[in-house]
Length: 371
Ligand SMILES: Cc1ncc(C[n+]2csc(CCOP(=O)(O)OP(=O)(O)O)c2C)c(N)n1
Image (cartoon, rainbow, N blue to C red):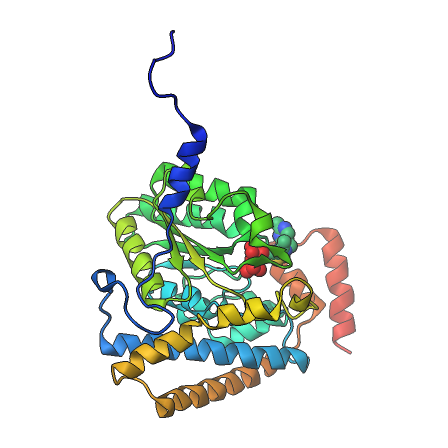
């Protein structure tokens, strides 16, 4: 067949045209001023205060968890400071019946979805009770395998769709996670079935020490959703109103049968990758840190709420004190959990009759543990 005359298809131009479409969506700027009134989600005063209180709680939890880890009272911990709007404002758009599939850094969303804090602390300590999710709490334990939660989210969303359940599955990964096969498989599958899933990519600029620029040739991570045929958006991940608005819209579309959405939230991780020895000063400068800190979600949201007469220092201190109290109680509860035994692991891992070798081991450990 003869090629058509006229303008040639230009793949380079097409790529640039798509990339240029992904401007960062913002509603509340760094100064705490609404710059996009038409998109304002118009949360009630009570909701605005609730959202701020949740973000303050999360910042305090981050500080306390960091020092509890240093004291040897917590185990695994992945810091969250800098990601409060990405995490908490996206979760704020969900209902209890929705399902949350977190990564290891997404413990705060699990808490606001109903997971007891003491359970999260036990998870950090590697205690088996930390992986026991209460019946009525729609979350999975935090995923450690990068990207695997995207596949699981596609499956849960498909399940909701098949059962006619009016709920969405929302999952989180990082910038590095978008390089994994599971990421592409998950978004493709949900796109193909038009399942009610919301895929959040928290672009905190680093996958451990690998900067975002070395991770992929793609100019934005949001544009990766286009190849899967799903609506995708790049949002200021330090703007709680913008993150909330795009997630709420994604949920609405999903419940209307319009399929999944991919949301890239542009944010920053202030702390180390985890508390297990990462030193961020080896791969980034303090100038970069302070550039991002100026965009902080808590600072801008505080200014905005103060301007509306909804927030002040006294109110913030109340939230901080309550948070500290709650954390103290939860650690006490975690301390009171029974010490785990090897026999627990054998019993938990196997339902029904144990194979002979494990029966032998169970007998040995039960004997040892009885002494
Ligand atoms: C499949 C897999 N490969 C490698 C790792 C080791 N690993 C742990 S965290 C991490 C970086 C992830 O970075 P990103 O997705 O940007 O998330 P962030 O930690 O910044 O939130 C890697 C490679 C892993 N856990 N799973």
